[in-house]
Amino acid sequence: MKTIYTLRCLLAIAFLAVNLSAWSQGITTPRTPSPAATVSQTIGISTITVSYSRPSVKGRVIWGELVPYGWNVQNFGNQKSAPWRAGANENTTIEFSHAAKVEGKDVPAGMYGMFFTINGDGSGELILSKDHRSWGSFFYEADHDQLRAKIQTREHAMTELLTYDFINLTKNSGELVLNWENKQFPVKIEFAVDDIVMANATEELKNVIGFNWQGYASAANYALQNKINTDQAIKWIDQAIATNPSFNTLNTKAGLLELQGKTADVQKMKDQAIALATENELNAYGYQLLNQGDNDGAIKYLKMNTDRHPESANAWDSLGEAYAIKGDKENAIKNFKKSLSLNPTEATKANSEKYLKKLGGM
Image 1 (cartoon, helix red, strand yellow):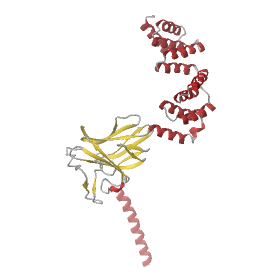
Image 2 (image 1 turned 180 degrees about the vertical axis):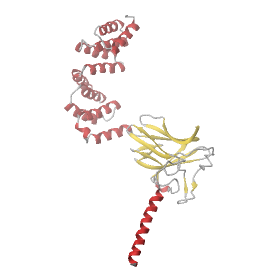
Image 3 (image 1 turned 60 degrees about the vertical axis):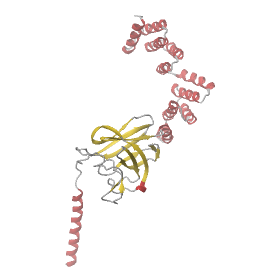
Image 4 (image 1 turned 180 degrees about the horizontal axis):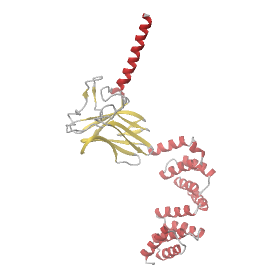
């Protein structure tokens, strides 16, 4: 009987321990103060994500008091000198989907704990740590650093809640900024966007995207528009052409050949493309040439479009616009009037009438 009693006691203790453990964890409730926040920014096809908590100023002196200057010995954890956690509560973290340059220094893709220091003269330091799971700065270890970079803080409009944001965005870069009280901490982040896109395209084309010509065409067109990797791009566009020889695929190849300086092959490829062009494609090509300042080339192909599609009011309107841009008033008026005689859509009609009024043809 004693054995049974002992077993019952042990079971009761175990049950109580499990229930107390569950009770101690509690439910998920709103975090106040210093609510949690996340901000993300895409540069090229790469994503930066910052997760942090947002303390408030609440009338306190922040710099030099609540956030001491320099490095400070922690009163908990490993009790070592550490930088500021750059937020509140858990580690502020930053995650890069691809390798990046941060303040000019290489940082591999991944998640990092983010810390700052600030000095009395406004100078400071950014620290990215490979340890991103700790609570605040209490367990900071210098030998876990991935990066340290000097920064210079800026004066900024009063910001009550600590806020991260992205500013000064370009194709390849942006600035991550921490704004709090009257200071801004700027961090420049850069990606080798074209290299990343090309490497990603190579991988994507090994999957479902590579089962159709559109994937190869879009990869080649990106290379054309950005004037990169022309050898690989021609291999891609040739795969697209093998399945879908069209104006767009052939014209893309013509552009790539032009970048490579193979002028003897360019016009031949363009002629093949033009032969397959639809009305809309030829019209768009004409406007492309106009935007490039090639008025005569635009007129040549837009006139070809009216020859192929003599009943298209839009084709005549576009040709009229090309003549107007060139400054050939007589031919512009003639073509706009032709467009109006062909029962144009409201948009085409409005465009022709606008030009005719401007040219004194109405």
